[in-house]
Every structure is written in C-alpha cells, then in structure tokens.
Length: 250
Image (tube, rainbow, N blue to C red; front, side):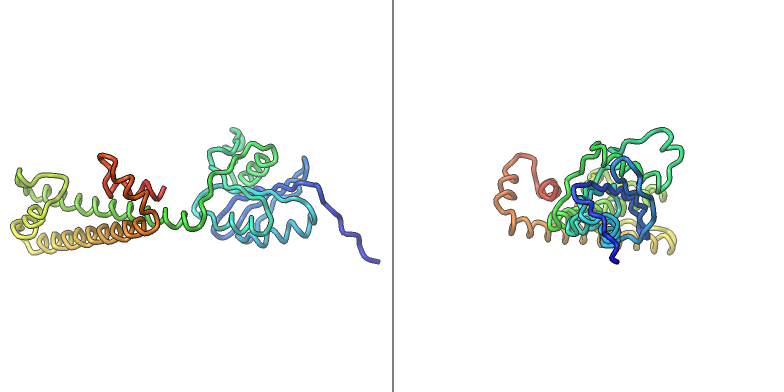
C-alpha cells in the first residue's frame, strides 16, 4: 500500500536564511509554527529539494541579508521557484534578547519571522549586467584609493627625511613638473633610502597607469552603450569624466 503524500497547496512556507561561505543556517516556518532550524550546504538547490520534499505544492518564500555573497544565490532561488528577497541587515526586527544571544540560528529565525509577518522589504537587486558594471566602476574607485595611498606614502617619506616640496609645485594635483622634481632632484644620503624611495615612485607610476587604463576602458564602454547619456551629462558645468563614470554606473 502506497503512503499518501501530503499536499500543501495553498499553504505558505517561510525560510529565513543566514548565509555563510561554507554553510547556511535555515529556519522554516509553517503557519504559526517553527518547523525546524538546521544547517545545510550553501546551495539554493539543496534548500529547494528540502522544501519540495517536505512541503510539496506549497508556495515558498525566503530571505537573506545582503552581504559578501552578492545576488547569485537570489537568482538561483528565484529560478527554482522560491520567492526570495535580499534584505538590508538593519531592516530585520531585532530585540535586546536577540542581540544578547546572537547566533546563526537566532539570525535565521529573525529573518523567517520578519518574512512571515511582512515586516521585511527587499532591496533593489540589479540584473547581472548592471551588477558587473557597478563592480567595474567600484574597481576604478578602489584603484583611485590605491593611487592616493601611493602619493601619501611619498609625502610622508619626504617629510620624514625633512625634504620640503618647492612652493610652486606644492599642489594636490601632481603635475609633470612635480614628478620630474621627484625623479631628478630629490636625493637621499643613504642607499637604503634611495632604494625605498625608488620603489615608492615605481608604485606611484604603476597605480597612476592603472587608473588611467581603467578610466579609458569605462569611457569607451559608456560611449558605446550609453552615448547619449554620456555626452548629455558632460554638458552640465562641473561634470567631468572623473565624476561622470561612477554616476552612470550607479
């Protein structure tokens, strides 16, 4: 005699997911009851198989906090038929008791309960193309930070060695004349200082070239795929390429 399979059609199942690199902590709520909280491999397919096995025919809802893993898990959950949202961590209702006893299980329960009560609102999830474009623009931003650090190291080293920048060159925007002064006129009394400074200059030139190259690539992309917006925004006074590229990618 075959065992009758339960049909959960018309029932909503809520899964709160605390996402980590090596495992997920998942809490599943059925109506007003907590079905169970468990750990599983970090896989949307594993979760779907679990839900489909235990609650066939039900409507599945899930949520996890935005973080290191991006939106790949979200897309996989949605493709499998789970109505998932990615939420901002600060939007999850939290009690003082939750804060005092913070664990992965506590976090997954909070997410599941907030999802069931309707208190959670998903953030905007970019499509894959826009997400990758933002990563491209973010890389340029990080390279600019690296360039500023390279310049700061040189400034600190000059100050440490009591070397003053000539007044006519002392500007945050390093001109070719400033670079020539660094290369040709700055001297040190010891070989170690000269070697250290040489590496600093090499790093500065490398970082500068990296910023120049990635900016060139971004401008070429926007001129090709967003030509009208690119040149329209350039007509605004004070809006140059350095400010324009991040805004187009946001």
